[in-house]
Image 1: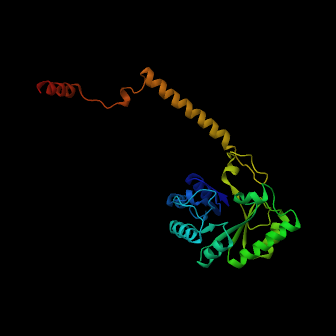
Image 2 (image 1 turned 180 degrees about the vertical axis):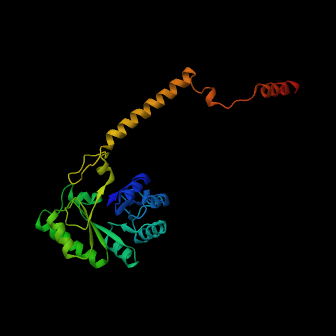
Image 3 (image 1 turned 120 degrees about the vertical axis):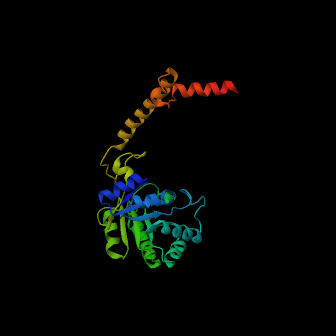
Length: 251
């Protein structure tokens, strides 16, 4: 599973045989769906701390439902939702396939900080109780982010939900990374759980240097008169131009 942000990344993932994609609602378009090919696509309906849908903050069950129906029509297969139990229950009761989130939840780091969650018996038990409630609500899958591997494996073996492991070991059902980490162009430090397979940042830096150089040469050509040249301009036969001038003179 990959988190992608462009049609190019979605198409490349499909060509590579990636099974699942995660795409934020703000990035999901018919073009993204087409690029994703046969991939099973999760649409991220994030809390109001991260973007909006059609300029609206998603704060009520009705708004989450409206967004889910809209993106289902485009071709979304399931929906990430880390909102309240009440909102998640409403979504499930309306037959929306919901992926919940447990562990390190970026929008909730006020309570956990940026760290692995579940390294104590108390935290693991709290997560277990939350997972059992999510299971009862009807969520079909859960993203487990930065949870100790043994705990994640226990969860996967003892509940009915599908587990997307993001830095939570090999015991989950799906291995999930961000395309920016796999490709090595993320703005932040590579997370401990991630693995970079290419260094796109170096390539992007090289391309940007070439971009600046091309723009600089374009500007220089304008001021020197090298651009535009005759080959860049439509021509008019001399006789036609003279006829044009003579008509102007006769008037």
